[in-house]
Image: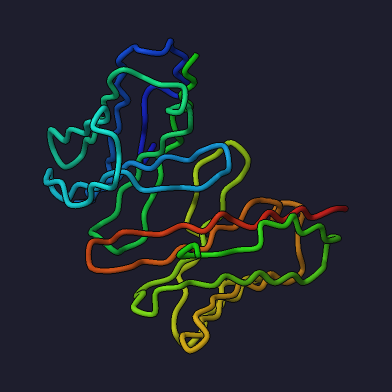
Length: 112
Length: 110
């Protein structure tokens, strides 16, 4: 059984488009996260939700809007995509904040 | 200065070798420490937590030196399957925010 799943796995789109990435975890965890891994391989946290409540919001352009309909799901919507948004986006979850995190397989976004 | 620094490598070692990676962190108030492993084009996976007294899991040993603010990972008897990028991870504050190092790439050769 997949613990943390993301869709889609690959996303190729044009500049200016709007796209969404979905994440679901079946681990019963309370906290979920979005990370961005750029071409230099740095993993940077973008957002964190605890039980549907936003608790971490890093310096991310407001074109990025997370939504957590319930504690098992955390989606990421991106408006007006730019070339610099090309990266791998990982969703993760943990039992609670500060505990080890479990990652989804990643969504590889390429903006042309 | 980056909050978590690692030598990116690559470290090229023969099978059976012992290899050690170090990682330094800048925030002395950091609370928890982990090593993650990331294979090429895959997600990071938790390898082990790092405890103050040091801990061992099979061929892997993790050590923490709070005074010098560094963490180490020792891999004994390297296997080909150990080839991956090893990420040093530090938790700062109470929000559960994890800071990831750039990673150290290990290539184990036959």
